[in-house]
Structure formats: C-alpha cells, structure tokens
Image (cartoon, rainbow, N blue to C red; front, side, top):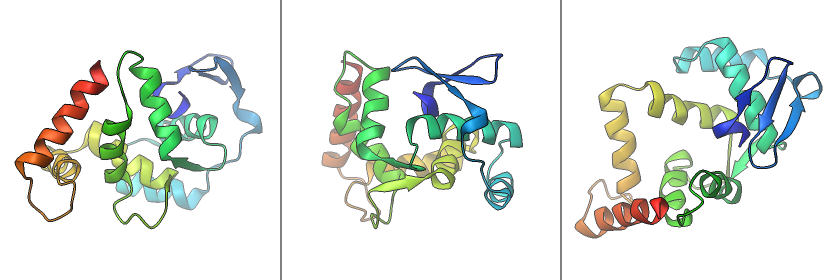
Length: 157
C-alpha cells in the first residue's frame, strides 16, 4: 500500500505493495507549497518525509482522497488472516470526526499519522480515547471498550 506500506526504491519510484506496480514520481501531481508549509507547522515530519508520504498516498488514492473502502483494503492487505472492517471503522472515525465527508484528504491523514507516530503520550491517549468513544459522548462504556478490543482481536485473526 502506498500510503501505509510503500517501500522506496533508488530509481525515484515507490513500490505499491498490493499490486507491486512501480510508480514514477515525476508524473504525479505536486503537493502545494501551502500544504507542505501547513504540515511542517502542524506535524513533526520533514519536508522530504511529507513528500514521500504524498507520493505513497497518491499511489493508493489518485483522487487525493482516502475513503473507507481503500482504508479497509490497506488493513486487509496488512492483516490477511484477520477481519479488518470493524477495526477500520473505529480508526477511520478518528480520521474523519465530523463525518461530513466519507473520505479524508492528505493533510488530515498526515495529522493523524503524525499523532500515532510522533505524538506525545497525551496526544496518543486523546486519539485512542476518540477511537474508543464510539458514540462521542466523552465517556467510554464497557460496551464501547469491548467492541474496539474485539475488533482488534478480529483484525489479528
């Protein structure tokens, strides 16, 4: 998967894991300077890391948007023996808290990835809380906790 599991190659291509199709970065759209500047301010990623993620993201999401179907596909590829849908529902909800759209853009994707990879303990706990608080009432019930934990076990197979 480009956005979540690409491997970089020396010849300026990114290998797309599920289909193993190399992608030439020279023909992909450029990320705007304003988005790069915003991400440099909002995240702990370097410009090169942002660009690497951008090329991987476009490999999997040529429209520039990541929808839930593609998100589930990524996890199903990573965990072929498990059931990804329930877990992905919980994680995707944290990417898209306003639920106004059924897809997320690259900037939102990177902000959440930054929290999970580079965030402080408090930021990670807040993100995890959002995932467990399924109904958004600012409390985690036993039922919500059970649903998320069960989805993790299902994911692992």
